[in-house]
Image (cartoon, rainbow, N blue to C red):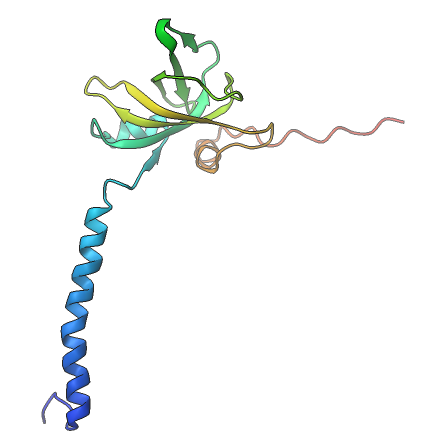
Length: 158
């Protein structure tokens, strides 16, 4: 009993499939390999420390801006600490911060770690209203048991 179909037409289809499948798999593999640097991972400060993120890899660091940690340095540089209540990470940023950047609020800083363990941000994203927090930050805070949740609605008084 032969594994090949008896029909000439079916054998031709099987041959075409046998050639196309590895070519397609190779194309997908090369595409994924080429995009490996375009993927930006999200970490909280505790996760980044535990995962030992390699220096130079572009990542997003999210959490809350630690109260009292924002320092405006000469030349337009800013440093602040991002916390997930388990760990904190010092972030340095050169440029203008978003208008809604505040201490105690959710923030995502995109950038990379240096060899000394500092984080240099190239972009800082802040929440856009009082009820919004970036999904990744909210998920991390919920997982850590630090989620403050929504404030209760005020009760009407008569």
